Amino acid sequence: MQVLLVEDQPQLAQRMAQGLSEAGFTVEVAANGMAGLRFVESAEYDLVILDVMLPGLNAWKLQQAIRQKGDTPMLFLTTPDGIEDRLRGLELHEDDYLLKPFEDKALVARVRKVLKRDRGR
Image 1 (spheres, one colour):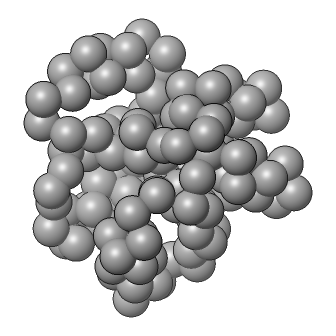
Image 2 (tube, one colour):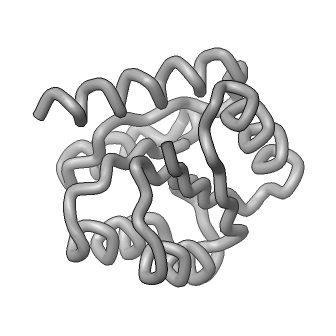
C-alpha cells in the first residue's frame, strides 16, 4: 500500500514514516503542501496523510487538488485545540483525523481503519 505523508516537522515525519514502513506500508514524505502537490500529481496513492498546519499550500487547498484527481482516502493530523479544523475537514469530506500527539500504534490502526473503510465503498 502506497502512502503519502505530508508533514512539515522532520522528526515527526521520520518517526511516522518509520512506523508505517514497519507496519508494511510504502511511504513517501513531503515536507510542505507544494511538495505534496507535486507528489500527488506524479503518482497514485492508497492514502494521503495531511498535517493541517502546512507551510505554503495549506492542507485544505491540497485536499481540493487531491479530490480533483479522485477519491483517495485522506487522514488529517490536527492538534487537540483544532476543533475548527476538524469540523472544516468533516465538511470537506475528509476520511478521518488523528489528534497530535499520538502513539505510532494509533497512527497505524487509524490508517488501517481508513483503508478498510475505503475498500468497502
